[in-house]
Amino acid sequence: MQTQLPPRTLFSFAISLLFLSMAPAKRGCSCSAPQLLSQLQSQANITGDMESLLEPYIRLQSLSSPALRAACTGHPAQAFPSEDTLRHLSKSHFLNTVYVTLERVWHQLGALREQFLKTRAFLQLEWTRQNIQGIRNNVYCMARLLRHPLEITQVDSGVSPSPTTASGTFKTKIDSCRFLWGYHRFMGSVGRVFREWENGSRRSRRHSPLRAWRKGARRI
Image (tube, rainbow, N blue to C red):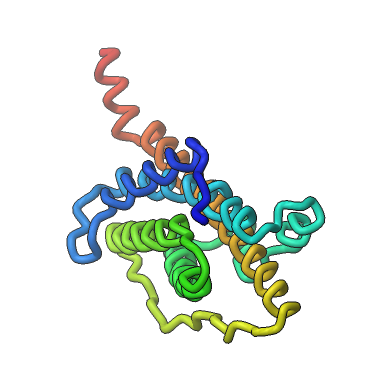
């Protein structure tokens, strides 16, 4: 049976799909760096919202009890770099890390989708995969604008065969739940790093010599 989505979740998906449609194609990066930065920050904030994927997954898999929630979110997300690590990367390495990590997430969500195709609909999963492609396109374009070409390598999808035992199936649910929790935390961290970029860019423009000269000229 398909789950009825709350209005807030539907609104988030609508906005995320809007940003996805705005994302430039890899071969036609027409947006300016400030526009791309604004889009990336917004996209990261949307995908960092756990209502967009983790909470629907928890409800579908009947993991809503406090003990099971704690099993999902009470462990460090080792599959993703920490926010402190991301913050200390150079811009080129940061963009490359986001691009490669999201490719791995895209593959993992594809494997998770295959499990749900056999049982029930999980529309949020497909929307998330589409949104990830939009974010990766914007990251690609940002790297081009900054003249930091991405070091694109083959990514291990990390997909393992689905267990058939009841205990193995439950472990898979918990592992997937932890992975989604780590993904949301990672995207929240990415959004905060992009916000720091934007704030730093504003400070640079505010204190630029040209701006100071224009202020002096206006006073004269």
